[in-house]
Length: 239
Image 1 (cartoon, rainbow, N blue to C red):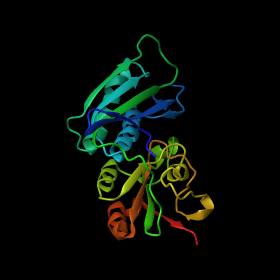
Image 2: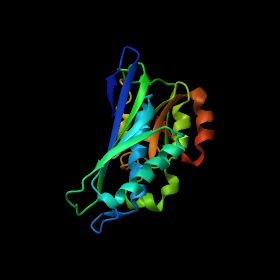
Image 3: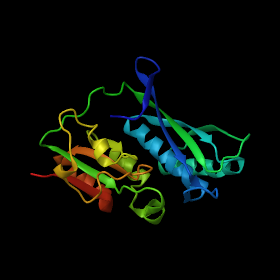
Image 4: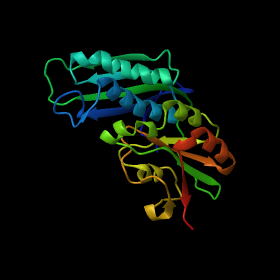
């Protein structure tokens, strides 16, 4: 259900580690997508920190692996700090390393976020009932279309707010798409595209988690719809 590593500290606390990587996106001539390095690290941080928060952990550190060269370091750090500022993570510690012995022809980074959680991660998946409601917040975007349609990506601050609502489960969507993530959530239900009505493509890559799944009960539907605004896309089960 969760794409994270959990490591117990003691009987009450654990460390949650979430990671992301990015390749061929940046400022090098042979990169497939040309964007500033600040943007590259911002979206990589976004993926890892959303995974961490979704697992119920409070992020406290980020570790950056930089294969873009020494000159990219400051921009990459700015991208991480931008994401941290949007989430109010004023005390986030950042460390990392740069490959400086050899120059790669394309840009690449890896990034991990560490968070602290009270109690163990739930081992069981969710139970789908008639009262279960599922929404996608944001749109699945990848590569150049994210640059062109960035306003459709769910804001980090919105994710933090919805993730904090009691009895609401969130799950960031990655490159395998909404349907793949959805089918890892429930122990008693698996969906096919034909089973659901949706305004968004359920099988398309969501790149750097430009959207996320929210699972909630009917009595929270209006609250979440109002919070999400135009980012809200309900998934309706076909009769």
